[in-house]
Image 1 (cartoon, rainbow, N blue to C red):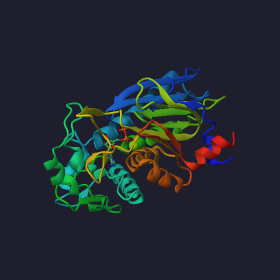
Image 2 (cartoon, protein in one colour):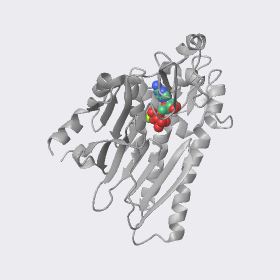
Image 3 (cartoon, rainbow, N blue to C red):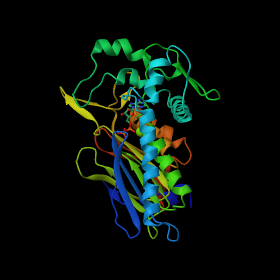
Image 4 (cartoon, helix red, strand yellow):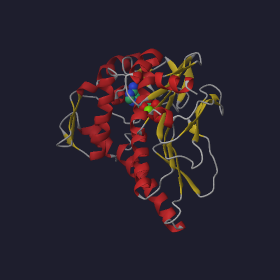
Length: 334
Ligand code: ADP
Ligand code: MG
């Protein structure tokens, strides 16, 4: 059986979040970090854990989310990322191993996607305010669009330094940091002896193991019908991320302004309604779901089909579903 076939046990039907399943000895806690709801669930290892240990484990997982949130939130002037944004256009900035690792992975996906994924989208993205319904004017777009340029982000991994080669360039890790944090959470649980867990940060989830007797049912939200699912899938041992145009948006003069920007224009990417990506690690599914969202059906599937062990489900502009090749194969073979 292929890696994928073990991961995706079946496509159940038409319908990003986890469908809650209550089961004995599974513990569940939710908190807010990184601007979204974080859900941590795990199955108590039978022999070792006492209730006190179980609480301590939740604490260490949520502390990690809090630590990364404080480090990587570009809107918090006291964060390390805000300092990088203030200083890196004038000199090389020595920064944390976590920021260096996440930026390096982001640049990898920028190169793979010819700039569809670009953390310097923030050079323009900082002028949007979705809550207030504000988008940058054409003048601001014209002024700042060329500051979206991942090739102007210089990284020295050995020295742990980052430098921007363009004044006014700003970075935001919102398309990849939640996935990274989910991976860290799963590592903490796994190192503590947990063999079955689900961790979700908004649209980014990772499943460790399975539910014991069955796979975990994961739903992809219907992009236009609140509270409904477009797809339900039983999954085990995988990460899945969904990027949608319904998360943070406003509609003005018939145009949908939302939080995923096409780096070529500095405006919201409008090709699809939702893109979901399955990968082993959530840092990869997170970055790639945003990437595929920007690329659209054709170029998005071409990219995913070229990456071994990665799959995608796209809901196009008219609500039709598109699957990557390996997913189609595993559906056909059922
Ligand atoms: P969500 O944050 O809703 O889970 P995504 O993973 O798709 O959804 O990430 C969207 C976020 O990614 C945006 O809020 C923004 O921070 C960032 N982003 C937007 N456009 C791009 C882009 N072209 N490349 C990289 N990151 C982006
Ligand atoms: Mg993403």
